[in-house]
Image: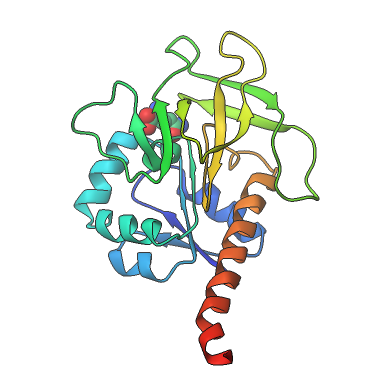
Length: 215
Ligand code: GLN
């Protein structure tokens, strides 16, 4: 079983654990540096990215997380988690740090105070050949992606309203992020996409470890 950690310093940890568990992953909470070493992939939940950033630093998780992400560990961030995985925050506060990894600029609370939360059906660029159709996306004080680098694949955009066309789901290598919260409903397809990235990465790694002996 792939062991997938959910960063559990703040935010909607339990919903992600339940989604991963339902997909047959070994879902565990991550609060301590040693726990960062034992996982095959990491989910960063929704919550409040400024608080998450402070707690990640206070719990000495920043260095191990940066190292594992740099080494290629798959990670998926939802909402505040997307902000944590972004290389840049538009109009960011000088004291807010992200972990980074995704070559994107996010804008926090981008949809404005008047529309705290909303829901929309979005087209999604599924990588799993079996998955089709739109995704019902729940946005809660969500960021959008304002700019993407050349390596970033855009997976979904807002479909209607004033923000139509705004990028709200991306992937770059083993990192993926959504502005919305797939953990709130019963649809597990987005989590399933991440679990398959983790499984593939694990296979590649065990292949890489074994090949020198085979030769
Ligand atoms: N607005 C929050 C932030 O900036 C994100 C909201 C969420 O995760 N639902 O961190």
